[in-house]
Length: 94
Image (cartoon, rainbow, N blue to C red; front, side):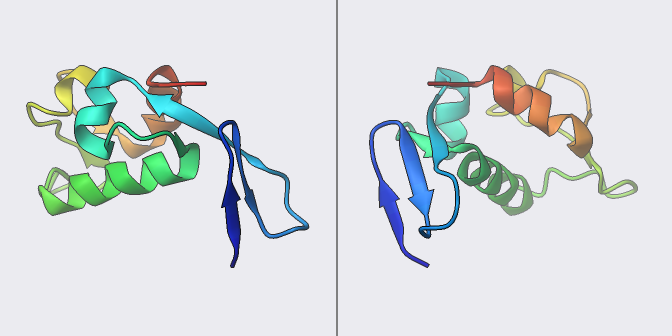
């Protein structure tokens, strides 16, 4: 799959709409990096970090237990994976 990245959008294949490219907030950048990225890429990197650091609740894998790096992004308490879209939106800007 060929991708072409510009400053504002990323195009994946010729028949798909371009994806918007966002800048992560300073708190999110500590986890996913400071480079601009698409929302799906940000989510992939966030999940990769969560799995790498073993931050999923052992009894309920749908809950994330934030560590010191994720607390500024997700908040203090356990967070449901279904709340990620809203939380991610607050931490990505164009």
